[in-house]
Length: 345
Image 1 (cartoon, rainbow, N blue to C red):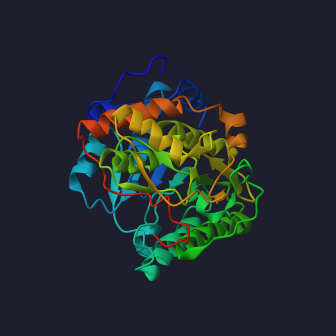
Image 2 (tube, rainbow, N blue to C red):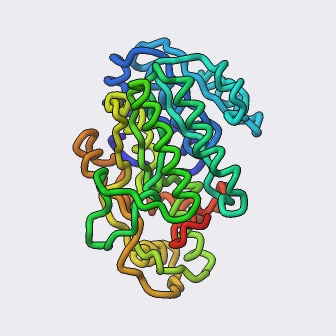
């Protein structure tokens, strides 16, 4: 977008911005062959990602099918996606028979997974994060697969390190991160066994107005709640920018599977972020504990070299988030737990 609005005032406006395809994406989609299936489309990212794919295809003059697969526990979401041109398929990805009946499209985006509550329900977490990817890697062995992963598979690194690169060896702490690494291994196995072109997207904190690190910090400032500085630094990226990168990542699919870090270029200080919200709210933030000299940080230099810098500047996202919070607009009420250092979510 050439000019940014002063604020984002409605869910409809937000969802339009999150799903607006970039000119580069439209150009790429004009040459992309085949239909696309989004598996686990009903989560935080899936709806805007699938809608962006539909819009980019339309602008590119392609009538490809866009499939969205989910349990769709929220019928309103399924209806909304259908109205937006996404062909929905309702079912449970834990059901092997259901997975085997899915259309074998040329392009697959895998979004399914479990994070929150993973400590209390470890068996389900491993089933969603490891067993399901095994089923999907088998069913879609002749497709291109873009699979979401997380920067949580990396070790904590010094805050001045610049963050983990794609070559940094994983060190998964806690069962959530271990199961996410297991998800990657399943797709790597499928890629090696069948030659399936695959890319693993290690996303490190996509944000928008309803959830994310900025919402977590902004709410605590607004409510005058203490902000734990133990995990004093983080990476974030506007979800719309991440969406555009992910949809262009079919071009990176290869065998053996490739890894791509996706996040913003800045190492964000949680203290400075809170102080910026304090300026906007006219409130002095309350802090507790001191910053550790390590954090979960990702280096997205490779991503930015391939696709350019994020379109939406970091401070613009802070301003939008502050106004959203001040107006009491809807939130997803899903804290990121970015301050967690023991791997327990």
